[in-house]
Length: 42
Image (cartoon, rainbow, N blue to C red; front, side, top):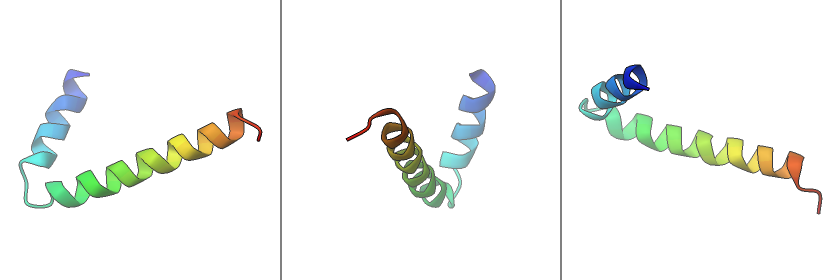
């Protein structure tokens, strides 16, 4: 966890931090959506 938080801090302090944050959030939502669709059958 400390390794990830250090990496996260280095990413967020850079100029490209905003880009990585947006892409990371999008991928997280996409993964949650896929996981939810596989677990819950409508």
